[in-house]
Length: 208
Image (cartoon, rainbow, N blue to C red; front, top):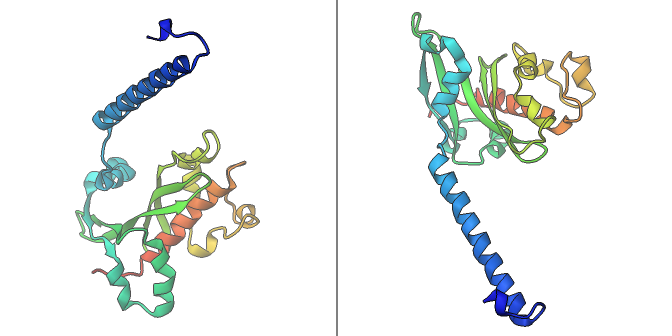
């Protein structure tokens, strides 16, 4: 046992390593156990309903994802533009339909762009011309108190009703176009613009 081993002896150090390895293994197992019992799989439809808020019951939500194969009908330049957006074989797309009039309200895309610390996922609703809704879903990789503020409603609402031409394409254009960048979070702020650009571009892809 450790108490019987002379301090500083090889067997003393060996016991320390073994105890530390055992303790680390137990802690890792405990963390994995907690994660597995608390983990909730992503529910994109629920995210869309949350974005629609209290008005969600007024709409029919139809999910029709965009696959890479559907890009084949586009011209080569557009196809080359959109292909890098596909980190998977398909992109999530939701049609929002007014239940009363059965008229289309907007199309919502689940899009991802790289922020300062990692991927930032958002829902963007558009009619193909303007941004009608924005909901940032995942900013866990961004800096707390800085980059994570892109998930705040006050920041997101600045993009509502903006067209592609009204979005800032570089840092110098933010103030000129009347949109406030989050101070100290240049990359995170620009990520939301990139997500919106993707959604506006994806709108032109027809149904599978």
